Length: 63
Image 1 (cartoon, rainbow, N blue to C red):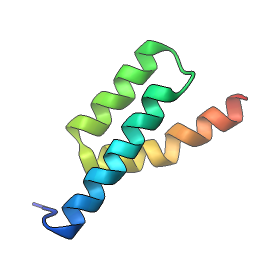
Image 2: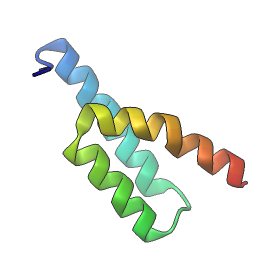
Image 3: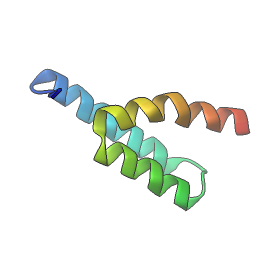
Image 4: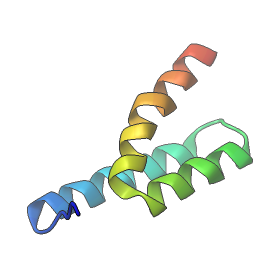
């Protein structure tokens, strides 16, 4: 299993908090926000990476 501890864990925590703040502050529908937030909370590393690839870029394309 892959485990982040120490400095790596703090960096991941900061990135997850940044992602959650961005998700909550977005103009997306509430259901979409809830699903993204759950993904980032339940799967911190994988959820953040998926959000980083699919989340912000899809918001730019929709504008």
